[in-house]
Length: 272
Ligand code: C2E
Ligand code: CA
Ligand code: CA
Ligand code: CA
Image (cartoon, rainbow, N blue to C red; front, top):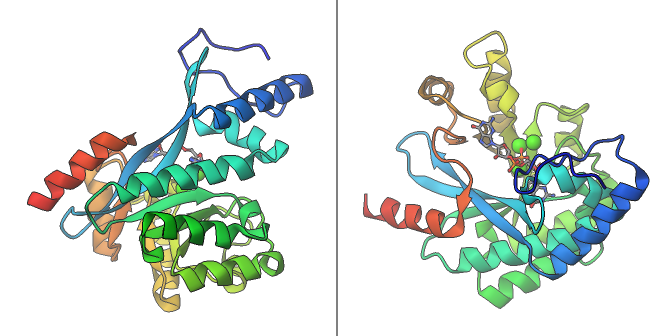
């Protein structure tokens, strides 16, 4: 493929119009990247709106591409989804995330993004269970985020969801409120958490604020955790707390950061 960026600028972009040959080239490179550990994770804190304490983090994947520099997930996750590489990529992410979590002396919950496809993979829950065992991590310290914008097949996902539940692993519905069938999804897919999409977070206090309030009510009625994503200003944080949100994530509290930096943030947090 033709990089639309100078080396290192990370502006290389996947788009629907990308030639099939370019996509398959990127796919071949991605296969090697997974094998050769060119991927790495950044961690973005999820904090308590009541006292600012770190409750957890979301792991976000990056690709340290040898020519194009650091690539954001939007440039390669869609290709991974199309080529099936999302399965080995997802397992790489889980492995790395659980390993790094095991290295921190804390009881935070780590959110890891998975694909709707993982929920249909027989053996996915077994894989997660084996990983937790290997690192002696309790299932309750992991939440798996599945984005609402990808179709989840409730029947085909049932046994994996039951397996994850048996492990105590939480399932979180990401980008909540943006999907085509938000409430139907909650009805059909048993989840433990919803993440209010940042388009709604950032619309607080404007005319879309009622969505943030309604999502919290729905979550409350169903006994689900609710996390507000994409909080950038103190004003947004204050209003979300006033609405009743307990947990939030966004640039205001911390950008996605390397594991070592997040580890230090946890140490500082433990002292206060
Ligand atoms: P997401 O799961 O909705 O992740 C949140 C995205 O919003 C992240 O972008 C994060 O950097 C960004 N963000 C966080 N706080 C703020 C804020 O206050 N303001 C704004 N404007 N943005 C904020 P990122 O890291 O580029 O990830 C993009 C998407 O890529 C993720 O969206 C997720 O869908 C996907 N992704 C990331 N890591 C993985 C992974 O390991 N596996 C899979 N399957 N998908 C992943
Ligand atoms: Ca997510
Ligand atoms: Ca999200
Ligand atoms: Ca998103």
